[in-house]
Amino acid sequence: MEVIDLKGRKALVVGVANADSLAWWAAKHLRGAGADLAMTYLNDKAKPYVAPLAAELGAEILMPCNVAVPGQLEAVFDAVRQKWGRIDVVFHAIAWARKEDLHGRLVDCSADGFAESMLISCHSFIRMARLAEPLMTNGGSLLTLSYYGAEKVVDHYNVMGPVKAALEASVRYLAHELGPKDIRVNAISAGPIKTRAASGIEHFDELLSEAAAKAPLRRAIDACEVGRVSALLASDYAASITGEIVHADAGFHVAGMVFH
Image 1 (cartoon, rainbow, N blue to C red):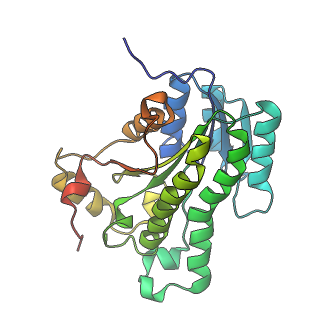
Image 2 (image 1 turned 30 degrees about the vertical axis):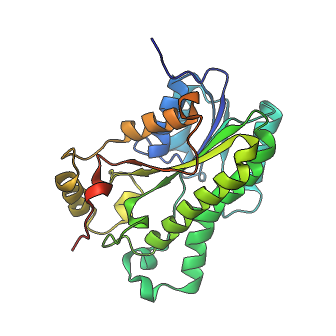
């Protein structure tokens, strides 16, 4: 019987906010497949929500990581190097936009707000790739999260549409650059799921119901399904997959629509 086996692999999961986070489900499935875990939390306010989850999975490293704070991301990778000497999997689940930019029209988005969204939601993944590269001595898997709004217009997704589009393009370029070192880079384009991040999108419940009605499987997905895809992409079963935007959305992307 074949199973996904990540025993002995070292995995860093960045972006867990609470038990509803897609990053949490990725961590659960990576750990369930045998990987050793490092996890991060955003700040002291988030720590009480994340620390019990890290303890539940026996995470060997738990550190703060606000990518907007100079040095914090580097400190996480320093801790990984000191503890393990290498890294095999990095899961990036960070996205942010100012409320006025997320709720307003793209044409009205401020330059500063756009730059902040790009730095936190997109460039942080590039930074992680750069820090992970010397630690992925046996190759590895870099994973991030995207959404259909990067491909087509989704009402109320606003500034995050072009930001996620940039993230998806970055996946392809990083895959090209890091492939010779057997480092694979992929994104999971997840269907809409009720998470804390999703709560910031206006009319999210409407978007969720429309997606479930339109998707070929005629349902929404759950966070556990994203976690399973994460474990798959981190494993040897995906050894030939890189530069891909893997849709875990009940097929919605093949029958997508603009929401009004």
